[in-house]
Amino acid sequence: MNRNRSQTWFRLFVLLSGLLLALVVMIGCTEDGGPAGPSDPVDGVDLLGLEDGRRLIYLRLDSIRDDDFNLQVTEAYDTFLVTGTGEDWSIGNTAQPVISLKVTDLAVIQNGYWPLVGGNPDIVHLPVPPVLMPRSLSNSGSWGGYCPQIQLGTEEVQHLFYYSYFGFHHTKSYVAYRQVNVPAGSFTAFQFNVNLYQFYDDTDPVATVLESYVPEIGLIQLTVSGGSFKRILSLVSYQ
Image (cartoon, rainbow, N blue to C red; front, side, top):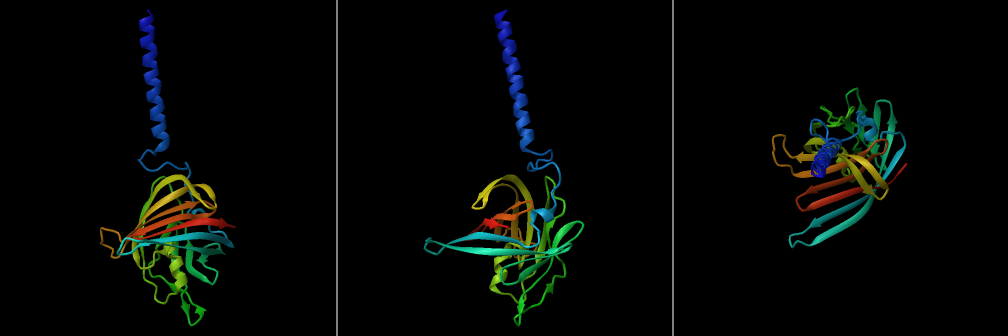
């Protein structure tokens, strides 16, 4: 009698353990195998932190290995400014706006950029605007695009390379929803993998990027790796 009771409890324990394991797996993944995240779609406007007057300060760490495998690391701070209203937005630095954004029903696109022409900013419109972020991001999503090489650029444009991928074809995929720690704090972020290609039919990327975004804030961390070069951009403060 006691033996039968023991077997019964053992079977019940195994059944409950299996149900608990299945619940953990279901929590960690979506039905289509994508990363778990909020049940409601997230607006790309919120992920990009499009709020007029927003100021984002980042710590930039660059590391590169020379031919003798010596590691050189440099540190700097970058400040980005967001301005705009309604459908029309821009992201730039403290000197001027750099990339022009347009909010549509389906996506936030980059419709142009501002190089310095004779000391006066003059927008250059892109013939085929690349998608920076879809308006509705569900538990899976990927897209691609191309941003042509800048015609007349300045050093400031390079600081915004990660928003616009100047001169590269790219693919971008939502891959994770996880905790990310940066100097500005600890956030649950949407993470994207970006592959950068020199030509549209290349199969091997020249660089890869991992981007982390938080709704109502924007980009909080970015890691780009290509060859012997690596850059980490981490949010220090925002307002």
